[in-house]
Image (cartoon, rainbow, N blue to C red; front, side, top):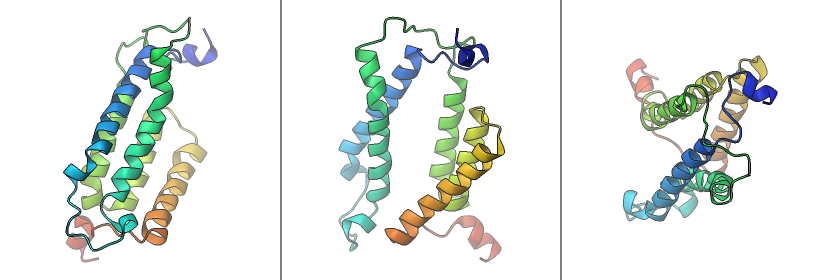
Length: 171
């Protein structure tokens, strides 16, 4: 066993992780193909890059691209790859991360805003995934939040709705 496996981390050669990622990538591909069905763009006067499709298009495309290595490993596994996941038998950390992803991006953006949602999602996800250092657990969410705000709000000029929390406190 490698040092990574001895510390209680999941088996790096586990096919469960690849299957899970392939399912996420397949779901993202399906949503990407049917995106125009889910989002009404008929009444939007904005150019394409400012419209409501751009953010889901980018996120779903990244998810599909990120799942490709897992799909290839499932189709042609390494000789020593196993279906052993970890000692618990359930991918608890990825499941918790997905729950936070859903909570912060479906409910969080409208409630606390995009900046707070991105920052809190990355902060909590890093902690759940076992990153405890200040550089990774604080600096990384700050940098990624700043990059997302810079790209979407200032470069692409895509503004998100005013969060409910700001409406309640009068901001």
